[in-house]
Structure formats: C-alpha cells, structure tokens
Length: 505
Image: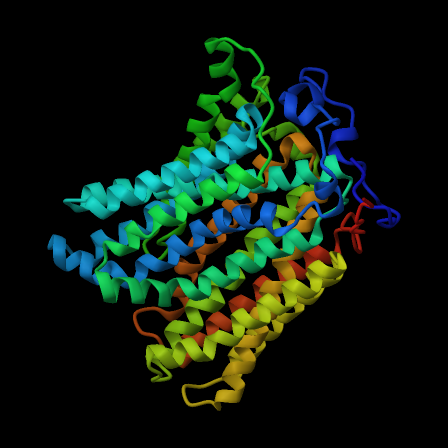
C-alpha cells in the first residue's frame, strides 16, 4: 500500500502490510478474505473518475451517523420514559450507558467480522439489526425490553463506522485514489453535525409523537441506508469455503468475550470515580492479562496484541484519540452544566452559546481534510485545547457573552483539528486487513475518554456546580491538552501531510 506520493520525513515508517510477519503468524495478506487479496476488482470508468461520489459515500456517511444520533436523541425522552414505566432517573440512565457499553465492545468486533465475511455484508447486517432494535423499542412494554432495544441499536450501529472505513479503503485501493482525506473529513463532520441536531431532533419527535418516536425513527432511517448501500456499494466477493469449525475458530469468540469483559469492567469503573469500585479495576486488569495471553496464542486474533505492542506510532494515535475524546467531552458537558447551573442561562441559551463549538469544529475539519494536513493540525488542536482550559480559568458566572463564545470556538477548533488528523494518521498506519478492526478500536478509545469525562466533571464540581469547580476543570483541560501536545510533538512518525491523488479517467 502506498500511503502518499510525498515524503513523510526522515522517520517515514513502512506500512504494516509490507512488514515481515511474525514467524508464528500467517502473513497479513494470507489472513485477508478473497475480496481484500484481489487487486483486480473490476472498476467502472465512473468509479475511477470519481471514486468517492455521493452515491457511494452517502449510505456510508448516513450509517456512520446512526450511532451518535441515537446517543444524543434519547436524552430528551428519559423523563417521559421514567413516568410511563414508573421508574426513577437511575434506571432510565441505564438506557444511555448500555448503548455506550455495547458500542465500545462491538465496534472492533464488527471490524473483525468484516474481515471474515466482507464489509458490505456486515454493514448491511448491522443496519438490519438497528431496524429490529428500533421496532423493539417502539413496541417495548417495559423498561427491560427497552434496554434490549438500546443494546440492539448499539450493536447494529457499531457495524457501520468500521465497515465503512474498510469499504473506503477498498475503493481507494482498487481505483488508485490515494489517501481519501476529504472522505475521512466528511465522516468527522457528519458525526459532529449529528451531535448538534440529535437533541433538537429528539425534542421535535418526542414532543410531537411521544418518546417511542425516538425508537421508531430508526426504522425508516435504517431502511433508507440499506437501500442506498444495496445500489451504490459494490458487492463483496464470494465467501471462501470453510467449515463450521474453521469459521468458529476464525471468529476468536474467547478473545471477543475477554475483550468485552475487560472494556465493560473498565468503563463501569471509570464511570463513577467519586465512589471508586476498585474490584472492577482488578477485574479489568485480570481479564486484560488473560486477553493478551489468549490473543498471543491464536492464529486469527481479534486484536493482534504482539503487533500492536511493537507499533508505537499506532499506540500514540490511540492515546491521542483517548485524550481528544476526554478533552472534548469534558469541555462540552462541563461547560454546558456550568453555564446553566452557575451562569443562570436557560437551556436554549446554552445551546446557542455552544453552537459555535460545532460550527468551528466543522470548519476546521473541512480545512484539514481538503489539504491532507496531519501533524500541524494535531499540534494546533492540542494548543487550542490548552487555550480553552486557560480561558476557563478567567470566566465567571456573569462573564461577557463574547468571552463565552470565544471559549466555545476554541473547544470546536481543538475537536475539528484533532479528530480528522487522528483519523488520517490511523488510516496511513494500518494495513488493509486491519483497517476495520483498528477503526473500531479507535472508537473504543474515544468512548473510554467520553465516559471518563463524566467522572472527571463530577470530581471537580463536587456536590455543587460553581465557578471554583469550573476553574479546577479548566486546569484538568490544560493538563489533557498538554499531554496531547507532548504525545504529538514527540511522535516523529506522524506525516506532515498526505497527498490526495485523484486518478485519471
């Protein structure tokens, strides 16, 4: 795989699919399914002249937005759900956490399945599970069934992003399109837009049709994505013939189970550090050790832990992804709570103050993706996060709106610069056979940061939201930004930019 036709600097790394495999493991190209091994997949003139046109990109972008939009929409329906089922806020809050937990576990798992069964098949199967989950939620007679629905939605939507990345990689390789920086930027922008519209869309649906509409809306959305993908995305090749025993062995079910247990125990522990349950951390450590031992010994691991242990640049990319998620969600949720509780702003006013965050993030992501920049935006994003924390030190409950909007813009610039560049770095650091699982794992790290942020906010604010607690949170944001800056500055393997080559017809 040629990552770019421009040099990356003196420490340009050899792509993973060109390295010597370990003696005890099959080469990457032997572990890929037929569709990934064949470089001669037929390409139409239209695909070669415009490989990432809207017909191909639209269903993948729509599918990838279904997870974040379901994450945010449910917030406006929790009170109504609690009233209908006569339960408390703690029980309905589990509707939020179950989707995060399922997503954190299933994103890399779905990436693994796509390498075995084909990314298009897994993409459409995942959206079909979403459709079923929406139907179950719309008809749910009690909270237990509603939790099942949210779990199905988490599992189904988790298939979309890693498989979409695999499909983009396949299209780029077969058409000679180079690194599709614009498309990678579009994924980041689409996710940001859905975070913005999720709450108002949920409010309209719940206000007009009741909370069940938050689940029913997935049915037409899923059907639309399935139909578009069936028409616009080329079919996977025929599955290789393998027996049931070989298929089960290739799935690495013990590895998936150990990974799930490790992630769930860790996330539940991180979700409430005000009253830490240390036994959960011990469980996560034990299961993590067992996972490493298992993955070292199997021929088709969910996570190639030996290669990951050697791949320091990829480790740093995952670290930056975790810090980006932690910094972003800490700033977003912490500032929103502070503006409403200490600043005295109404929810609608808070939304308007925070709106520049999304607009700045979208603008920064588009700027970076159209130019193929990688290292520079990572540095700028970390600096913007540090600046955000510094501004948090000087604002007060009645600070001028201009200062609050400036803080929101800094948050957005940090997010937009960092997310696209981390996504591009992951793309160029990962082999064809690993792109789906690696992309899913990057989302897992982002979820770890998001859930950790809730505990960080609780620890700094304490029992009452105040200016003092917000200033403490600002120091935490400065620390997160500094760690990200060091992780970027010391990583000489990050390319300065990638060349986006457009093939000739």
